[in-house]
Image (cartoon, rainbow, N blue to C red; front, side, top):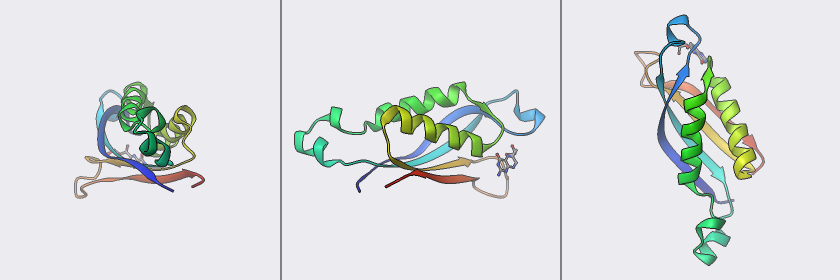
Length: 117
Ligand SMILES: Nc1nc2c(c(=O)[nH]1)N=C([C@H](O)[C@@H](O)CO)CN2
């Protein structure tokens, strides 16, 4: 199956389990890959048949603006469900990195796969 991907998408959101994190916004870095049959879009050179990575990125930004989760696990799970429902995506891989969370690490977070390829 073909893929469409979005790498290094940075979003601001309320995220964190500690009290000091509930009143601030922090950056998350997202890497996503989606199963998508790219042949129809390519055959017609037609964006309406493609999984539009710009539209998906905009939807993710709106989701992050409104989200207020404690765990990156919850952020990842809810976002995955939203994207699969809205864009009719059958499979995705989503990596959520919280860059500043562990100072000695360049990033920590979670990676999930949902759906069937
Ligand atoms: N598996 C997780 N571990 C931790 C999380 C998390 O979301 N998932 N969150 C925190 C704190 O919010 C931390 O990021 C603050 O720096 C700790 N561990």
